[in-house]
Length: 256
Image 1 (tube, rainbow, N blue to C red):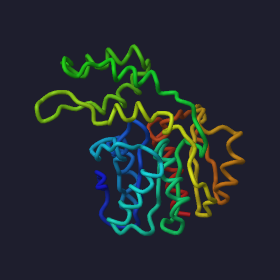
Image 2: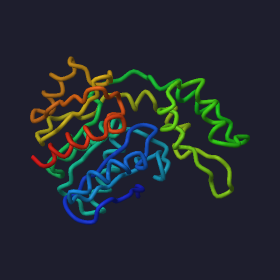
Image 3: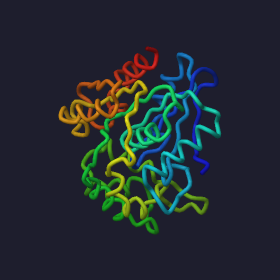
Image 4: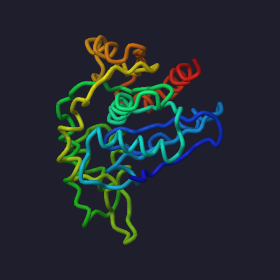
């Protein structure tokens, strides 16, 4: 599968970043410029059924790990640092378990290798409440979405998935019907789990419930050379809420 990507920086070691559910490479553009500045090539990848990458009939972590393997092979990236947020974090963990020795380091942002119950149902209902055939503006979409998601910042993030197609009509970049069908699997456990010995950093937000203190023993058992770092005052979107602290923590780990 040919995944859509953006590249920031032309020389230096490679850093490959995978976004989370409902996200895209666009969400990481500002952060990537700060990461690339010291001399890194940053590849921002749209995962399947998101952004400008192809829509498929399946959406699971084995498939997304295979997508990542193909991307790394196609771009001759045999020693990259892999970074994944939320769903992207599970993708890079699955890839690391399936393909040891093909990457340098792993960074997992605010997600643990465990099952999460479905908790995005309201967002899906909000998306489905927007009638694209009659929608006139993004403001109209935001007004509808506000009935399902109270946070303006989250709505702005979610509505980046809205665009005008070649016919000038609004459309979704995400494969909404498939994601709705696969929500349970997106929250699911990883498969064929094996110990990952590569250096790994887990970054969590102090205000996020995604990685709890109770999760740390299981993380360290599965990733014995891992560290869990907490960024104070951040929620699930750590990199967006505390960008300076996030970049500092990331670059310190990368440069160790």
